[in-house]
Length: 440
Image 1 (cartoon, rainbow, N blue to C red):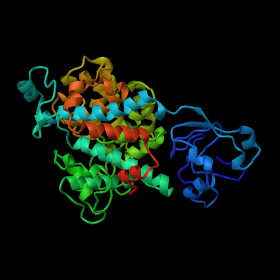
Image 2 (image 1 turned 90 degrees about the vertical axis):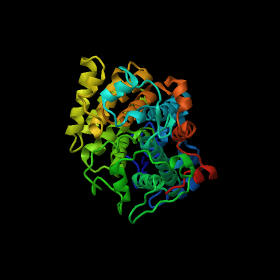
Image 3 (image 1 turned 90 degrees about the horizontal axis):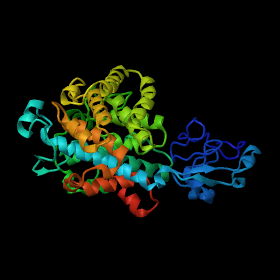
């Protein structure tokens, strides 16, 4: 917002040109951009917060209004009367349950698919019966075991929260870089290290959890990209991979920002750290955006429809768009079955994993077990398609829609719930939070 040149967001590189939206803090105003860190030209975010006590009272996720007469008169900032207009989504307990449902649902789908990830449909039916797997079966020495999909989802969430903490305290941050550091910490848990560049560290809380130091069939693209000397980006790709390793971990991005374009773009950039093919990172941008719209109250189908224009605006979108459109068509034209799923592919590559998951979510009849079990019982990457479907249905229906026995037997369920609740909070200005999510 600008008020005649007295106080301005114009110099803030994090303000958006879209009227009424600040994508750093998710704060809206009735007339223009209201940054929580209003700054004079060349003034730091921290200095602005110290100068204007009222700014420190503004909360992320709350919609604020200002005194329009004072604004139009060009009066300086202290003349404004800033007050909450409505309660933001993050202060709504029902929505918080959707955050938990999103991450828990993803982990449950991951754990259901883990034992059959490398099995054909005929092998699955031979072992578990004509309907396939119906509940957890042993993988990695236990029932309810998660895989690299959930491990990397947790590190994605940790990186996002550390980025938010850094931006709050430093006033500057490039979130994909902070998430990259989180991925290197995950790489360390797999017994691997980068060949130069950032070596990783064990600060924060996630790297202290011993159960994460277990190798669960990590994807080759993720491992090789993170072992490289520098972070992969869209402009300087680490490889030409379009495997599903970028999309299967990206759901937390849809829970972090309050603007769909930002969510889509950040999802792409974060996936491109390890997957350099446009389809590989655009599928991730799509899933992040779909999660965002679902959390905002849209249906699954509407969330897909709202995401398609964001996808079409990107170069190299054709493969991803074609797969999404086929998933929509099949969800309306065919009786759900594993054979229909296989018309969408096996899920090893990004657009197929996304399409299978969208199809299973659409035909799941708002039923987490039905949709997730459909998503894992096919010849292909069962844990990834199960995880993405679980993310979508969990975000739609909440944690209460997941069977209690699945939540109870799920590995690291307490950690996953804690991470989801932290994503809902986004930030606490306490020393405990800063130690939990240090900003690098």
